[in-house]
Image (tube, rainbow, N blue to C red; front, side, top):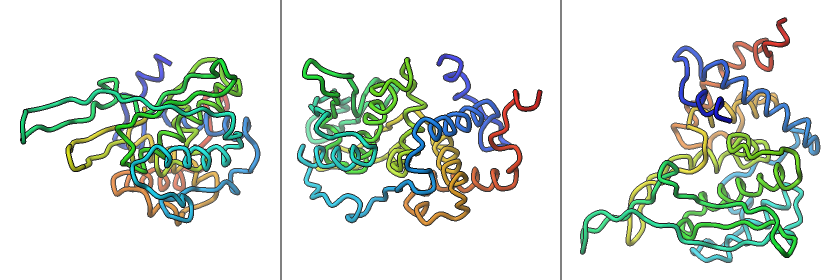
Length: 260
C-alpha cells in the first residue's frame, strides 16, 4: 500500500496518469471482474442522480440513509438485513465568531470521515457508520454508503486480507456508483448555517476519470449516456482518459510480465 500511495502523487503530463498508476487501475478492475463475474460488466446497472434510481424523499433525515443502504446493498447482492447502520458527528473547523462564523468541513487530510466500516459486530451484522454532517447532501450520502458497502464486498466477504482504500474506491465504479463517488471527490457547498468545502474518497479527480473510462472501455462505450451526469472537471478527465484508451487500445490491459 505504501508503494501505491507514492504512485498516487505523480503523473506524466503526456498521459492521463503515470504508467504504474494506470496499470494499478487496469489490473484491479480486471480483478474485480474476475472476482465478481455476475452480472457481466456490460449488464451492470449504472446509477444516476435521478428519482427513478433513488426514489427517496431527501429531507436531511437518517431515514434517507437507510433507504440508500437498501438500494445499494441489493445492487451489490448484499442482504440489507445483515447491515447495521449507526451515526456519528465528527468535528467541524470553526473560523471567526458571532454572525461571521464560518464552519469548514475538515477534509480527508484532516481526518474527517464521511463513513466508517467496522466489520461484523457482536450481533453478527456488518456495522457501518455515517457522519451526520453529510445528511443534507444526497450525493455524498450515496457515495459514502457505496464506499462502505464495497468494504463488505471486499473485506467482509474475504476477497482481500488487508484493507485497500484505492481498490475500494475503484469498486464503487465497478458496482455502478462511480458518478457519485467521483462527483463528491471535491465539493463546495452552502447550507443555512455553514459553507465551505469537503472532499471524500481516496482517489484524485484524474484517478476517477481514468477509473470511469476503464469501466466504459470494458463496456465498449465510447460516448456513454451516463457520463453527462459527471461534474465538468471529472468529465474532462474522463473524456481525456477514454480518448487515450481508444487511441492506444493495444496498450490497455497490457502488463510488463506480458512483454517478457
